[in-house]
Each structure stands twice: as structure tokens, then as C-alpha cells.
Image (cartoon, rainbow, N blue to C red; front, side, top):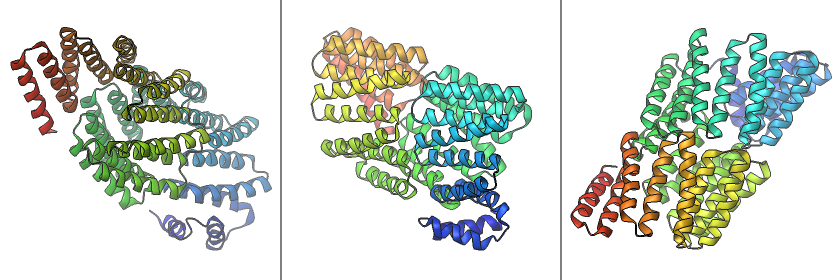
Length: 511
């Protein structure tokens, strides 16, 4: 951090909630001619944005915008609109993000700045992707990629491929996501972009994790981590620890996940990364939730919520409410869970986050399921399913079908339950979601057991167990052994039942 950064950040800490006073102080601290002030405040905003002072960054760019308009500097004006879009995106206001990128795009087109135009398409792609419109996001990222190809901007081409990979992953097409991330990685290697290479390893890890290949995910995240350490990227290192924590979490190794999230948190605190700190609290809350420590989970989610409120990030605020709802549900307070899901739903509707809205309906469905109101649960899961289908989110659609299957099973309609679990299984197979496939086999096993077909139930539970072993999911493995034990008990094979239940207990003790 240089002297200018230190001066700006010290002022930001004092005036974090007083933008007018901050701007006034910057005017005094950096006395320069009027015609240079647009550039000054553009730069100040960038520095603030990089340290997560999004509200002050907004104020700086709005102030810079006034000078650029006054001086008829169209390029500067366009840059301000683009930066304002990025800031609103970071605050979770994705509609406003899109609005500003469209303003920026119009100017860049008018002045013939193709590189600027490409950046706007990228911003629009990210904005629409954040709202859950992955297909529209792909459309914009492809426009950006075309321009990058036309003007020979290889570095930008690599970024476009990465963004397309992320968009396809959000659609649940993880195979296509991997294809784009590998293209991005090849370019990064060819041009010697080490930071870009690290980002590609992260993205590939996330994609393989979404496919349930958690060991491969860990392998890629460790490659990314090595580069981040080599180049001294502390913020990137923190994110790698987060990703490793999430991978171990997916494997059911919750204590190891906590260890990595705490490493990430320490770095976020050391470098003053407020948004990173908030994300760490969320991840720690989720890990403690999975260990059954619901009160501790609530404590961490409340810390994350406080930061989200302080920086005005509505998307993260919404996610915190969902997580708090789940934690209170774990404590058996399902009414409180419903209350938090409804708070989250209101925000997602306000900011136009369709994917978030779908998740809220799923959360409400789960809460009503826990209350034993299976018909109401079905009603909410159907709302969730409709949105996921509308926005083309195959992974979300598969989860909804699974939730509907479980709800119908509890109503005693096992045939309908099987129908939904088979739909979920088909999607999991289509998108290559191995972990999801395993869960479907487990659900089908339970449904056939409820129909009294224990032989078929054992067949499905064995399929589930095989996948759990392959991907190293110890928690899932324990569950499969438990399900097999129950099926053999129902068949009257008590020796085998005891054997499987004992293995299940041993696996649980090792978690």
C-alpha cells in the first residue's frame, strides 16, 4: 500500500458513512486544477472500491462524473458510468448496475471505443448473471468475446472465456463451463498471465466441485493457492482458503472446512477486506450449522449480516437472512425460519434477483415441510421450480424436483415421489452432477423401501454408496450405510443390518 492509498483509506475509515465530508476532505488534501478533478476522483473511487468502501466509491465517481460532464469529457463520463455500475453490483443492486452499464455502453459506442464497449458487455453479462438470467448473461459475454477477438485483445478474450464458464456453470452446464475455463487457462498460459492462470484454476476447481468431483476441486484450488502465495496476492490467498474450506465442507469434513475458513478470515481481517470478512463469517456459520452447532452458526451469520448492512450489500443481506432462517430451523424454531425466509424474499423481489427468489421459495418449502405442512411445502417448491425452469437453471431445477419428491413421500404418495426423484436423477445425469446423482439414488432407495420393495431399495442405496466412496463424501457414505442397514433390517437380515449400521456409526464418529 502506497502513501496515497494510506491517506485515502485513513480518511475513508473516519468518514465511511459521511460521503459529503469525505469528498470535501479529498478536495482539501489533493488541490489540483478544475480540469483535472474528474480524473482525481475517478482514481480515488477505484482505490476505495478495491478496499470495499463501495458507498464512498459511489460518491467519488458521482462527483467525478459532474466534472467530466462539465468538461465535455465523454470517455471519462463513460468510465464513471461503468464504475458506478460495478459499485452498485457490489452492493447487490443489480438492476442499477445494468442501468449504468447501459449508459456507459451508449457513450462508448458513440465515440467508437470498442474496448470500452466490450467491458460494458462484460458488466452487463455479470449483472444479468447476478439476477439469475444466465442465458442473457451468456449473450452479453459472447458479444464481449467477439469484440476481444476482433481487436486482438488476447487478455480480454481469456477473461470472456472465464465469464462464459461461470455463466454456463450457473445454468448447470458444468461440462461446458469446464470447456471455457480450459480455453481461458490456455490463453493465460500462452501470454504468461500468472494471476489469470490462478483464476482459471479456481474456476475449474469450482466447476469440478459442482460436479461432485471434490478431490479434483481441491487439487485445482491448491494450484491456485500456490500461485497466489508466490505472487504475494493476500486477497487471492484468502479466497483460495475459502474455496478449499467449501470443498472440504462438501466432502463432509466440516472441522477441516472451519480450519480453512479461519485462515481466510485472518487474512481478510489483516488486509481490511470487509466483504471477504463477511463471506468468511457466512462460511463459518454454514460449517457450524452442519456440525449441529446452530447457536454458533447464528452468531457467525449475524456478524456477516452486520457487515452487509454496514456496506449496504442487499444481496448478501438477503443471503444472511436465508442462512439465519436455516439455523433457527435447526433449533426447531420453524416460525422464525419462515420469518427470515420472507425477509430474504422481499429483498430478492426488490432487487430483481430471480435465482435468489427461487431459493427463498425453496427455503419456505423446507420450513413448512419441517412443520409437517407438506401441501404448503409442495406449493412453495413448485414456485421455486417454475422460476428455475424459467431462468434455465438446471441444477436448481434438479434440487426442486428432489424436494418435491421428498414432500410427496411424506404425504404417502410414493409413486409421485419416485416420479420426481427420477426427474431429478435425469437432470443430474445430463449436467454431470455426480453428487446430485448419488442423492437421487438415495432418495429413490427410500421411496422404494416405503413401497415395501426392499431389494430395489438396496440396489439404489448401493449405487449411492458407490458414488459417495468415489467422490470421498464421508458424511454421504455414512448415510448410505445407514440406509442399507435399515433396508436389510426390513428384509429380516438382522446380521447384515447390524453390520451396516455399525459401519455408519464408525463413519459418523470420524467426521
